Picture (cartoon, one colour):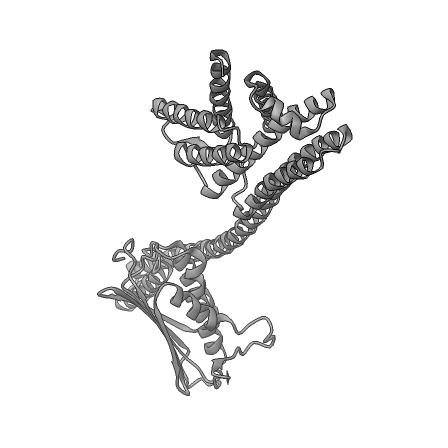
Length: 456
């Protein structure tokens, strides 16, 4: 090999890997952004290895070495999904192989020889091999241009799919191309038409890979988008519930403020009457009674204001409203209230479900001699959060196959409250227990304290 051929062959290897490096940068982030010498040093080393392997003039070995080198620099120089980087390496080598084959097929058609004979003529011609590098560069520039147009139009980045099974498509395509080469070597009598069909076949293989990889990426993005929209929709529904409960609480406070204003006016009137007459002791007793009643209402209105968890505060306020309207006594002893370690929907599941059941059970009590009462206790003992919900009841508990059944008319849409509560408690590594007597129903939960929780 002459000095010029050596320079051209080695330069081709360097150009190929530089193009690969540039192509990969369109999809992945460089690992060592401020240490470019490491990247260029690795590229130079891999180019040198590829050059010496090419001197053996074994096409299969050249392809395997190119695949190995592509995997090395994609995995070492870039950050991102491993599956996506491996897929990128396989696709790059397939593109290399097709770009190497197309000039040979064109040459075979022009000189009217078999493709295998054309390979023997061109494999040692470094200048001819540069045609494949030029074709590879044109394809990459065209792909980058269309990518830029798409990004400019839709303002979205093109990413390579993380589906590892898609790697089989470019891998099998490489073997198919070499299988075609093998058939052509065994049938030397095939004419130029076979070479032309082979070139069309290779282009079809390339477009098939593009369609599969980009199509899979499109559908995965679409599924992820639908999943994200569903999640956002559920969050929006929960937000609407909280906003609705807060609005109801605000309306109640407005009503209480109106009542307090009227009561204060009444106290002022009593003071004026007491000042002008001789019934001072009677007026004083009435004023004290009014004051005690007002303080009691104020305490009920602001009893949950100290709770840091918006979800728990909203649930308790809503429960208080339901209890007030149904004339149910709602006693609370909250010594711990920081549930920031728990997801918003999970707080609703473990508190709203049993409290709603308790309100319904108390509402079914029609005997005036029985007390309608719900008692909620939340405390912390060492590393456990203890939650106890007690309520009085009259109707018997329905049990089927060891599971408590709903008392609502439509059983198909209900009956999952206790099951969901137990599922969420188990999710956080906790314990739950349900027990009941003829007149009382008790739900007990124990949850391990998360590192982010604190005394509340």
